[in-house]
Length: 249
Image (cartoon, rainbow, N blue to C red; front, side, top):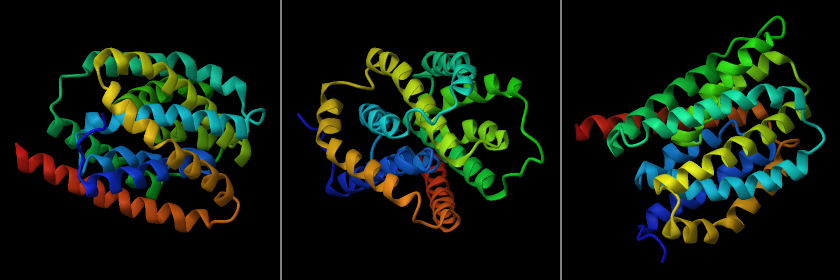
């Protein structure tokens, strides 16, 4: 049985899944961060996260297959302990926030990440590898809460001065790992269930089209303009979610 969502909710969900696919296919997950906050405007944030995770795993298969062999495996190994730590913390804290509390957190994360993307500093030299653990830990936590692991990971990876293809490929592998780690806790906590799984299955073609679009777009679209549009969207969605949350308290 499919979830009883409104037509507007389904439209938001379809667009969010497509956006995530585009992000995974060619933009290192950078604006997939918008997906759960966008869906949280029309459905429960936990429903949004649970519905999206199986689709993320499908997208990960497509993305990793497309970029395999171009990733920096040394960086991936540095991320592993932190990813497990972050997911474990997210699992332990699950249930301590209401839906409105989660919306407040999502809104805050959206604003913080948008400001970072707008003003992110350009490092003069590559950042030390000792920052991999804290960056991956935050990535694991924000990924568990809202599938928003890209910004914390990018804070570390961008100053590492990787080649564009290596950067995208490394992100693809890292996100595939953290999403696989999250699946067990999500099932255990009931965020992924039969109802959400049916909805996820229905949306697999949208996920596939999104990934293929991202692979096609990444070499053809002006990255600066695209990211500016995403930043504006994140600011608007973040402000809306905070307004919803505060209005309910």
